[in-house]
Image (cartoon, rainbow, N blue to C red; front, side, top):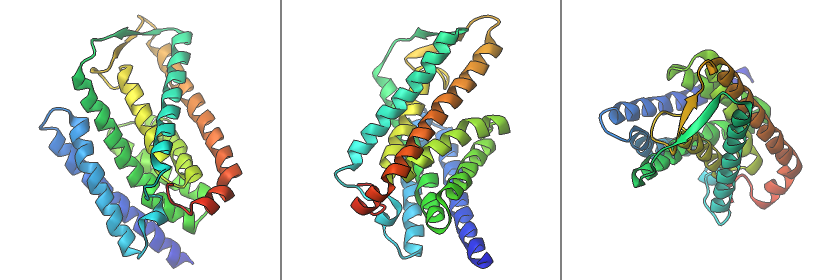
Length: 268
């Protein structure tokens, strides 16, 4: 039993380390060109998918065993994920606006904005493949789903810590988001919905100026309100993410037998 667990964790860590290497190489290449998010995603997403294929073949299994099949329900679930993600970012923004201390100033939209949007979709695809694809599916099949969710979420937070975030920011931000994306993957037994959800959140945050310049709005914090705005931002983020996690957990609990019968682990 101990040997089996050690081999399982070793396999997951090896996969995770390989995805980190892919990301590091992609990010290094992207530093020398414009539209870094798009270039990083365009390299890392297909490379991570190829790595996933390699590990799946290693285990003599199929794409459908890991929620990677594409069928008639895939695009619908992706669109549902986009809608849910847009609702969550809008809800958080609304709370921040009502609490005061921050406002948004409109910028001039251009067609060039479509490139970062596509980039965030590719980056979301890369992260869902790297964490909620092969690792989450293997762990969930060998352990309890909540154990798999916690392990994968911890790895997701560690990746962001290695990327420059502080531990509190990595755990509360990406760590909490990972619980939501992971539960979305478990609840739907596929990656279409979590990719849409993840992409919509990142795109929405970029559009409102949360990732620097280039969005449709620029975030302006009122003088003397920085600490208040920061507290509200983190609190509202926790509220909307925990609410989404509760809904997805309920959905998983109520429909897990239905999903299992209708679509055995695929993303249909």
